Length: 209
Image (tube, rainbow, N blue to C red; front, top):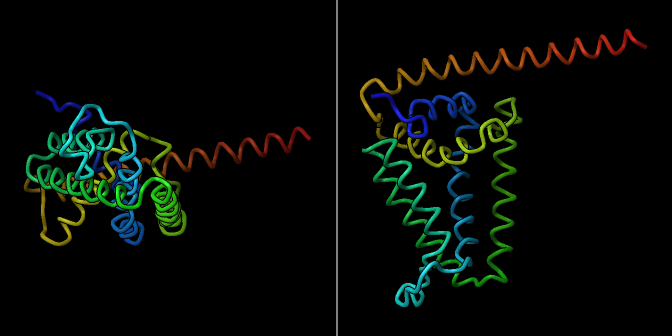
């Protein structure tokens, strides 16, 4: 039985890895991706609750869109990797709990300013990482869903591999290296075609004058 494309770890990992092949850009993402998600959850803390949960309300844990988004990400990663997925669940729940508590303490009037400043700073760093070190645009416009869903897990897997030599299965790194190289070659060919198209268009336009 073939893999469901949405939960195909190899497909997502190779695509994301090809767009983050520069080690400096990769490190920048390791630092700033999770703070983006954390502050996003802070903002979602102020969305309406789906149901009454008195104990949670008193603690500052509201069953709202913040919990829903956290659950979607957590389940998505469990389906993709049965070993690292549960760790991702723990990290996401920890993010939701801590983000909720921080947001409750700051209150909306201050929290949204903190979130805005953090988001602007983190996204700026990611754009610089791509533009200066990766020499290319972020993958976000090319595949919005894939990039947004995969980014935190890719960073987690990269950290686990770097620190513990973790692989979802034996030979995963070697397989991904080959797939990333193929993806990078394909991306370079696409860029070459775009540049060629622009040059031809410019020459044709100039000759018409």
